[in-house]
Length: 77
Image (cartoon, rainbow, N blue to C red; front, side, top):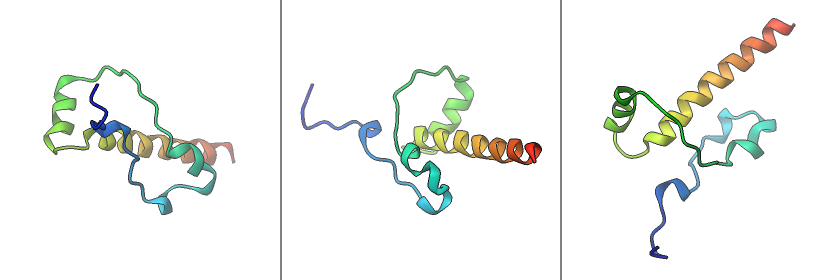
C-alpha cells in the first residue's frame, strides 16, 4: 500500500465538543471500523450530499442514541 495514502476514515473527526457531555469526551472521539448493511436508497441519499457521508451517518446515529438515553433517564426518575 502507498505509505503516502491516508484514507478519509483514518483522519480524526471534527467535533463540536460543546455538544458532548464531559463524561462522554473520552469515548466519543474513538472510532472503530465496522461492517454494516444499509438500504441502498438510504446510503445513496447520504452519499449524494458529498464527501463525509460516514460522518453524517455517525452523527444521525449519535443524535438518536442521545435522545433515547435522555428519554430512558427521564423514565427512571
